[in-house]
Length: 108
Image (tube, rainbow, N blue to C red; front, side, top):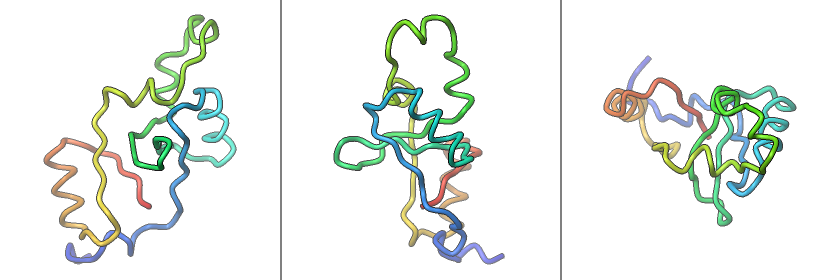
């Protein structure tokens, strides 16, 4: 496939987002209900803040999780988050993934 194709030509689903102040229990519930692996975290204004996965949540599961409320922001605050807009090309997307040594991606 040509690498000059726009990223938007390969998007199949809308992004599912959660505000960063929502509890992780809500994030996990949304992921299960919608059958998704990645959940986009946004701030109060809708700006992208990061992404969380099932693995992120399960890595912190321990008795402490149930003693205090942990929010989605907890999992994204120290993780880099890279994104492109739908007008970028596949070449640009692949270049970014190689440069940042990133395997996964979510499309809007």
